[in-house]
Length: 412
Image (cartoon, rainbow, N blue to C red; front, top):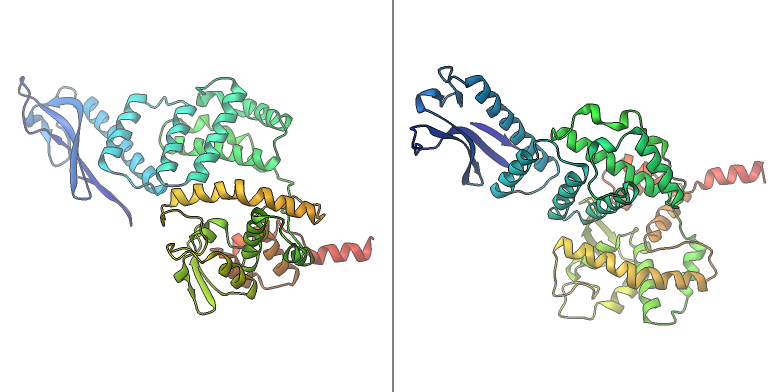
């Protein structure tokens, strides 16, 4: 019996014979699976007599005329199953025995000749099942872009090579795509190739990224932020309508709450507040964040937390629904429709010539800390990052006041 296990999953499978014999006296060779105290089986469409089968080695004995061929066939299935289980676990995808059987059948039916399109579509579905909707959307947009470039729906792995990737890069640039967008798409394509190689769908010799270097695609986009003077202007701004008031409040709430993401704002429960402090778990990293509420935040909370029927501070989530897929969709919709458009109107009215969106509140908070030469360890804790490397990488994309001052003193 072969057992694949991890901290979250345990699946065992073995090759054996079906109890009931066929009309010719032979018994079907099957794979028996056990997971979560449930079992099922899958026929290999092969058979042998019971005296030709070793229950100890789970292989055909030498007294079978085709024992080498059959045992090679069985070994290939073993490798396929182990790869599929590894793929489920590495991608943190919860799966059932029917899911596993379906993946095995699909793998077998494709006979390792899955097209790039088919493989990416399958990966998109897996991401959706894992509630990784943002990643699924990126993959979908990447596939759509490739299909437009190749002018066909079904793209083969062999069609994506060094030459076509360079042409695709030129195509995206000509279309006006930002370098950051191109970088995301090319890295997504590379990720699909890596997964396909690991799943034995394609050979390593088909990997085009040994020659085509993703690292050459560098984003020159900057992270916009508001200075502390501009934050003060926003504080003093008199909203012209309810939409502007909401957008202003959400941006400032994030700024004064250590750059909290919007999905975490809408998830904030009334019980998260104890005394003058608030505590929440950051969705992106799972890091617990606890901080003292400012007078500004307290004022905003009082404006929105009057709904006694809701668990949540802000009246955005319907029916107290906490499904992560629902929350991500709700967050995306609210930012797109109710926060960013009126926020841009406010910034325009304030005559601030910057492309400001809600997420710039986080950049503004982090930049303020960086300009004050706050320790990177403290900034890491404030932003809810898992490690120092993430904080360093993030801060490197923000302006450097010290460098600006040196250049200003010497050059200007």
